[in-house]
Image 1 (cartoon, rainbow, N blue to C red):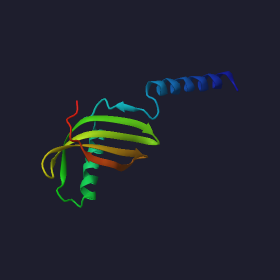
Image 2: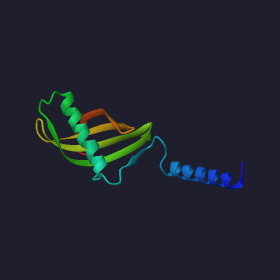
Image 3: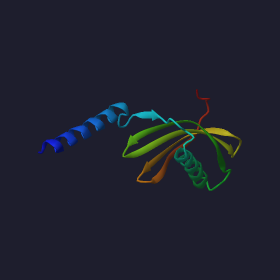
Image 4: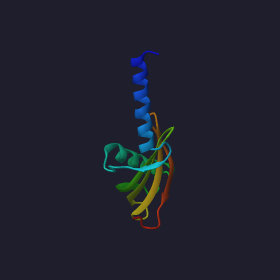
Length: 117
């Protein structure tokens, strides 16, 4: 292996290792900006899929995201605590969406009965 090629490979490995130690693969990390457009779209997707799966009986409408976590796996899992209007009154829900190669899949959408910090 040429010295320049070896140096580039070594630098790449160092960058990857520093990223992994700062953001461990598989560990849940807080979402820094829950107002980010992509995070908002994921939350809207979750509410929309919940409405679809319930045949639009008592449809819900996203009002805000209270908290968010992400997990790097084979793609990215997003766990969001959201507030909604509609249905049988306003409520909070915890939802998880898996994103892989741009495709979204709703994993769960469940009510939160206890106020979160």
